[in-house]
Length: 130
Image 1 (cartoon, helix red, strand yellow):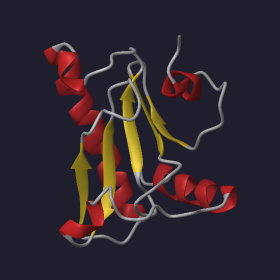
Image 2 (image 1 turned 135 degrees about the vertical axis):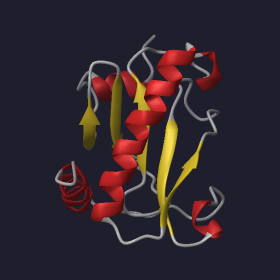
Image 3 (image 1 turned 45 degrees about the horizontal axis):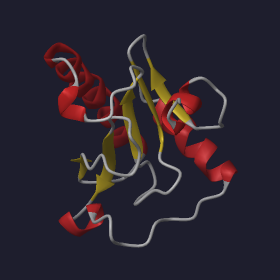
C-alpha cells in the first residue's frame, strides 16, 4: 500500500510542492513547527532513511541543501535545522525547519495552524528562491 507521501507525490492527496526531480520530492509539512517547514522524501518508498542506498542518501542530502537555501531566501531565520525522526510515516524523510534557536525545532511544541492560502503563498515564495 502506498504511503501518504507517495500519494502526495502522485497528486492523489493535495500538497504544497516546493521542488521535485526524478528521485526526490519536497513539500510543506501540513503540521509545521515554523512557516516554511518542509519535508524532503525520496520517490522510492523506503521506510527507514538509513536503508537507502548510499548514493541515493548522499544525493538526497544535496537535494535537501538546495531546498534549504531556497527556504533561507523566503523565510527569516538564522538557520534551517535538519531533523530525521522517521516514526510517524513509514517513508524516509528529512525535516527542514527554519530556526532562530535550538528550541524552534522541538517536535513537542505546538504545531502552527495555517490556512491553505497561507501555505500556498509560503510554497510559492520558497519555489521562487530556486
